[in-house]
Amino acid sequence: MKIVVLMSQMIGNHVSSGGDRQAVEVVKRWKESNEITVICPEAASTDIFMELGELWSNPVVWPLPNRGAFLPIPLLYLLRAIQTWWALRREHADTLVLSGDFICNTMPAFLCRRNFLSIAANVYHLNAPPHRRKANRAWASLLSFLAQRFSLWILRRVADRIMLLNIETRDGLIRLGFKESRLSITGGGIDMEAIEKASPSPEVYDLVFVGRINPTKGVMDLVDICRYLLEYRKAPLRVAIIGEDNTKYAAEVKQAFIDMMAEK
Image (cartoon, rainbow, N blue to C red; front, side):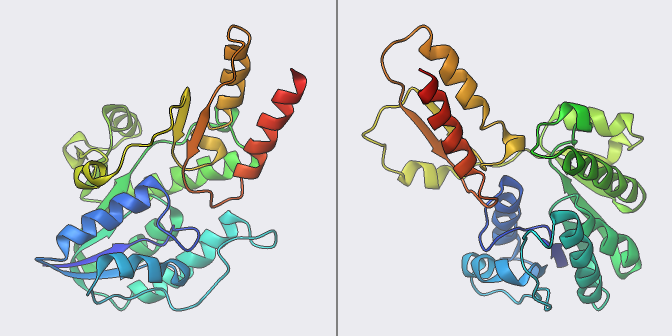
């Protein structure tokens, strides 16, 4: 079977988010018995293809900055949508797989849908409305919410299969008009071999956060949790934060801890 996989949403030079990691791990297994084409940002292609090994690939060819003050994420994703469409329009395959429900994946899929016998997509979660979502900027939450709703409108019309992490997301999509027969709960997947090979840390921590260091992941809540715990425990707390920082948010988290300790 010939499969084309879109990973156009990746930010940074590494496989960092949980969705990106899941997509790479799935492709590793597919490539052993299928012909795979991966379309991804040029900046991340080296890291992806180093992990995938021998694999014919088709990375997006026009290099663009990953992000910056002059190129916010919404504009970056629109430009990537054009790039991805340009690469995807030449592809014909049995299946097109979208590794995430981002407009840089869904718009090209909609425009090139006739090139594929079937289309599948991953939806990891439903973005909360702007007034309920934590983020540095209200406009960013609004744009993210609207962009996902537009992507879901596309997927409801073109996707033959939607792969989900949990029941909550499935029920949310059904309320938005998706047919239950097209929704499959696949879970996130865990690399048990990597866990078994890891050496236990000699350090003991009171609190551990594991995940991408981003406002939407709730990492800043650790500051309030520590502030609350220190009201009842006079001994110092040991906190470990483990995750990729592809938005330079870790510096703000560190400063928040410093400010909290200065209050004591």
